[in-house]
Length: 257
Image (cartoon, rainbow, N blue to C red; front, top):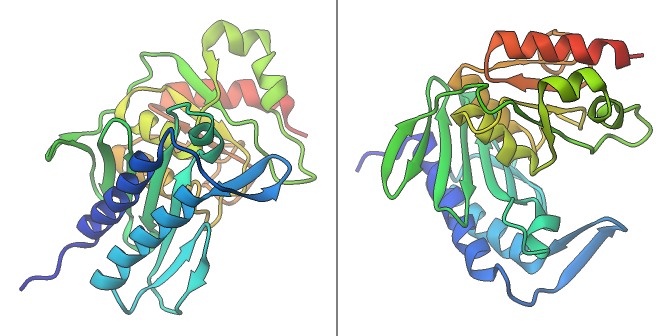
């Protein structure tokens, strides 16, 4: 029997996690504190176990780094798993969260939105959204003028989020939003957002990798805050098209130190 493609493994794994999250949504859940403003729930833990079961069955020799259970195995191929991106929203019954699975070396990503049944996926060359078994191509567009500005930042770093959201030129050009990081990147890939901005910790991140792979495969423009390749400098700007991207870089530049 033929082995499934990496992208199909990613989709199956993301859907397995999404099934757990969907069943747990709206119910009473135990919480496990990580910090005063961050925690995991039993939905995070059970969803990650479901994802790992799929990956280990299909790719037993691969390594995995998960948000909740950490790293398992040592291999050149390493999967990145965030079983519930947007746990705070999930716990507050705010339907802005996703399940993320990525295999960076292969350009493979799957981002499941549990409450809509959608899976946004990329195989390294194309990006699509799957709903009810049917795939549609991801088509970025800046038509909405909606830009999500992530307010998270690494400890001790300067963040321009508050400055940008109060910048009159930014507010005249775009409607600012704050949402789930990976879900918003998926929305940029399919044209539901014009752009996404963050200076979160990006390298090998279970939170951002799946979303950035989706945007890259969809043909979005992605750089750091200075317009250089991602991971070479601070931050991330993912935009639907080059013109929107340049407009955002011009707005960000005065706020950089």
